Amino acid sequence: MTSTQTEGLIGMLTVLGILVLLILPSVLGIVHDRRIDRQIKKAQDRQGRLQRFARAA
Image (cartoon, rainbow, N blue to C red; front, side):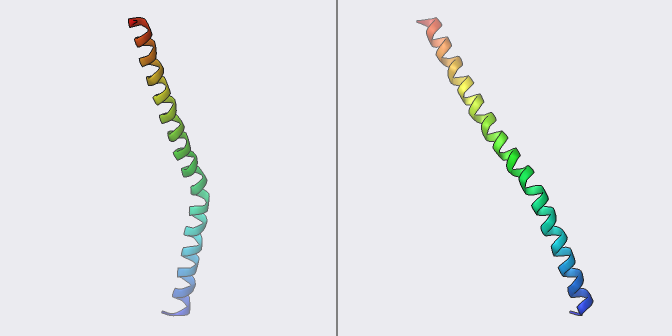
């Protein structure tokens, strides 16, 4: 590998590293929001079942 190729590789890896650092917070936020959405849906389902049970009794 020549020094020009090495410099190009280092530059490319640097750009990819910066890209990952910029994208990572967004991905973590999306994962967090989906987890909260699942928890809310589960709670709503549970509440709906309890209300149906209360009406039947």
